[in-house]
Image 1: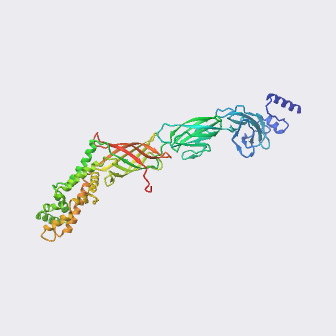
Image 2: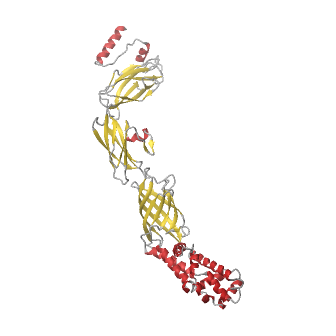
Image 3: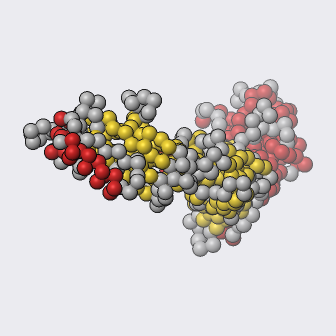
Length: 557
């Protein structure tokens, strides 16, 4: 038996040609068992469950080891454990990792027997003399195996100039470069923490301003991922091979826009009318004509209109008969001329016509339509547009639907697109624009009826009609004060007619596009561009102009 053992050792040493392999003698029952069972363990040929293998830390066998950092030519004793414990023949080998070979790395043995009580065996690894990475594999037959990733690193440092390659439109004021060791670009987001959608900064970080390419100082490694970003709106990554020690190297990173964020957007949007068509002008003129027609009716003068309206407001037929009788007897229409501006019988309708004409031109401004665009917390291609003003007039008073559902999208080049349909009452729009001009001309007036009252003085009218009466009453039992109140009510009734002059409704289907600016989080904070709209009034029914959107200003600022 002893002679057989010595012969086996001698043959083993000759076969390995001077390597550090140490082969034990089959002097124990455990080794004999492992040898007779083909390395699979067990006893008496009975089938046993395949063991599992794991590498462990030298300092603490209870802690599994999945990777190991070494420096060139370092010797390291590596432990492996089989479970359940037993005597197993474990074979060791070095295998390339990600295309990097083990070079001149070596093991002191190619196989070893595990301790039958603990299932532990050891192998001594000598690291290669150059920087690389590889896998140490351990296996028991074909049933069990384990892998340990080994990274051979340098204690030296390298300097990298990170050069951005970006052809987009987003402005950059600061670059941030990072190096992630032993990582490839596709895995960066999976193996690092994320900082607002991008990989978090590492200990190997460099920042530069004014667009100057940053420089990184990193340990020499077989591989690493180099990332470059501007804020959280530009990002790029490149896989870097081993840099040179004590020599400045450069790496170019292609950058792409982080997708523009359209969720939780709140923008003040303005649309100006700069392009009009004949159909658009005809639409406004037609609305103004409907308002004038509703105002004047069949009357020839404003006093005739006023007196007819006053009579129509009386409650009883007897009051209306008394009113008409007094009007004819005392020639009210002629005697009341002093109450109207410049004693012009058509002063009100002439003024209204001027206000309507001036109001229609107010739509051809840079702020024809103004409102607030708001998108939902989760971007879904839609937004809500709250139309606030039309040519400076409250949108609802101008007959518009104030709340609009819109489309709200963007392309990779930060061009945003907005689509909406405006709907309104034509006579309400014309009246509201006219009212804005009337109250501008008469600042003390709040609406059209009060502007009319500045042109036709109801107090003078009532006093004039009272002086023409032979009694204390102007008609029936209505005195001067009563007549003055009736006159004001008539002016309000005349105004009400102009707002509902026509039941025609109009709609404008508009689409707008613009170049957006983003903040540090790639959120859209403003845009400028153009818009165009069409409405069903013939082939040339188009209107358009400029559009802009900006974040609302904080009143406290």
